[in-house]
Amino acid sequence: MNRIIILTELVQDFYESHRASWIPYWTEYLYKNHIFLVAELAEKLSEEFHINPEFSIAASLLHDIADAVVDRTDPDHMKISEMITLELLEIAWFSEEEREVIVYDIIAKHSCRNGIKPESIEGQIMTSADAIAHLSSDFYGFVLVQKMRKWDSIESIKTWWLPKVERDFFIKICFENIRERYRSYFEKSKNLFLEL
Image (cartoon, rainbow, N blue to C red):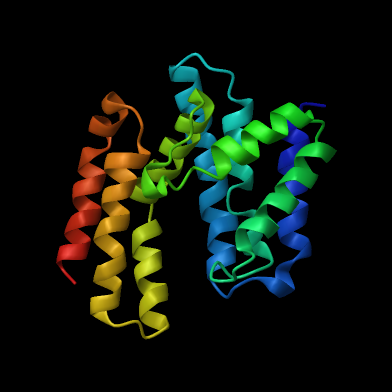
């Protein structure tokens, strides 16, 4: 059986078996609307760049896995994510070296904070796919609703919003030609912010 098929089933089982721990609305959204979209986009980008898609797809499926069991504000979120990801990759027959690339180059660096970006082409593809998913889906509208539900002030939303949208577009999309392809989505997301 294909390792990605095995991993997809493991990820689905993990999310489903931890429903009681889900953050209301957020975890379900990631599971049903985000991670599989990122995987699909990573596969398409891998084909476009003639790269084996396995690492990019695996990282896409796993990059938000800790959200199934713990809130992102938990100080152990990254450690929990790493532990779960390493375990699921091992069960899906990824070697130790492969697991290290997926966890420590791709997933750990996919947010592109502080100028740190994935070094591997697979990591750059997954990072780009994640940003494209944010920009081209209802992700920002969903996040806006969730922040308003928590009674975040418009000012705190604005403080988060524009830097996130700009990081997605200018930093996380690692390929200029791909960035230009999604410029209209960036403009739409940015304009949604400006209307707040």
